[in-house]
Amino acid sequence: MRFSQIDVFTHELMVGNPVAVVHDADAVSDDDMAAFARWTNLSETTFLLTPTDPVADYRLRIFTTHGELPFAGHPTLGSARAWLAAGGVPKQHGRLVQECGAGLVRVRDRGGRLAFAAPPLLRSGPVDEADVERVVAGLGLSRSDVVDVQWGDNGPGWVILLLASAEAVLAVDPAALGADEKVGIVGPHPDGSATDFEVRAFFPGGEDPVTGSLNASIAQWFIESGRAPSAYTAAQGTVLGRRGRVHIELDDDDDIWVGGDTVVGITGTVDL
Image (tube, rainbow, N blue to C red):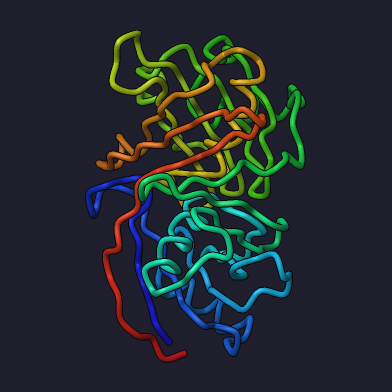
């Protein structure tokens, strides 16, 4: 089968978030998908399959090293780029429809930059204070360091903490965070900076370089509450030596689009 590795949320190879993509994977078993994802040891590995919904251009299954996800952002953009680069032709010019565990996800192509429409949140709103205290302690913070906190669950299940500044976000040490926690932190850069917000994402296994699902949840919270303008750019991966850039835009139909550049880094074949 054809194999690709795509760097996502970057225009320069090796400074974004890579995703491994196996093409034409209908014959691959669930066990082999899970085993291959553990072997690649990337945050996500995806498998392109024939869609079951006639509206969709392709079907996608997304695996971490620990299990399957119904949806994730950077695998969505990376897999869309891999599908297009392999000769895929969308049913609608400039628009793709991805079928995945979370349903149908729209992906648009604007001059080569791909973006997905943020899916509806499965859970939002306040986080139980006992959970907040546990997460705050795990990040080495005090409760007063947190400006606000919300659920932002569109599949992975993020608890999102707003801190006072990007500097505060970059200073966080998650050494005591629980092994099963999925936590995002975000803070604003000073006015006039090249990016508007700094984002970090912690999940079982470590820190994710650049995270589409988390940024989608943050955008839904921030734009709807007036904490962010209708279009902005977030930086992520700085602490890890990456330069991820996530471009957010609210369109006239009230859809929030989460976009980024994508680079094809590796192409070849894999025998599963």
